[in-house]
Each structure stands twice: as C-alpha cells, then as structure tokens.
Image (cartoon, rainbow, N blue to C red; front, side):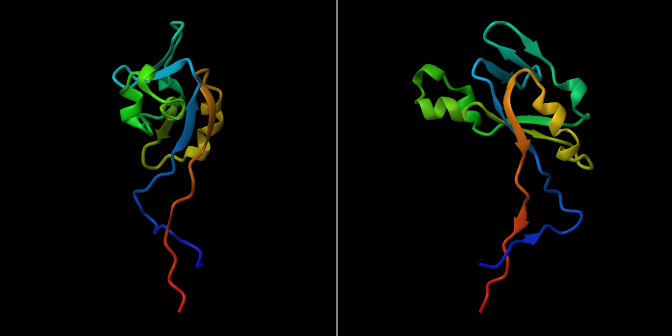
Length: 120
C-alpha cells in the first residue's frame, strides 16, 4: 500500500479536537455551553478563539431521546468535535480543552491526507 499524500499548502481542511462528554453532560449549541444533569454549567468561550465551533459527531443521536437508544447509541451521542478557526492549530488548545470539567477525554483528530498513488 502506498502511503498517503499530505494535503496541499493552503488547504481549508482543519484538524479538530475530538472529545467525549462525561455521561451526565450535554452540549447546548444554541447557548454555546455545556450543562450537566445536576445543573452545572460550563462555557468554553474563554478557552477558545473567536470563530471556533463545537459540533456533535452524531447530531441525530444527540437530539434523540436517550431512553429510546441502545447502549452503543447512547455512547456515540457523547462524541463531539471542537473545530478551531482557520489559522489556529488544535495542537495549541488540546491541553486546555482536556481540563474542561464536562469532558471524559479529548485528543487531536487524525492527520488528514489524500490517497497515495497506485503502484503498478
């Protein structure tokens, strides 16, 4: 198998921070804050640059009633991505994001590459 080819310079593709919420926490995209089942709140605004986005990896599951979901679906609905604005690197923010009280884990997303050439 031929190794992948790095993205061209100037590419719009950004590496996110992939994270998993603790079981009792949810992200409210309208209010841009995290809420726990016990009423705790956490706003990520001060630890992220302007223009950052937080999105669920499985938005349909995130909106679903958890009582109607399987155990695997309830687990999957806890995954989010923190996407930083162009010109900002996830590497510079991942350590601070790991300290958020609402997260079980946070890691850099995978390096993105184009498929390698086909060997004859």
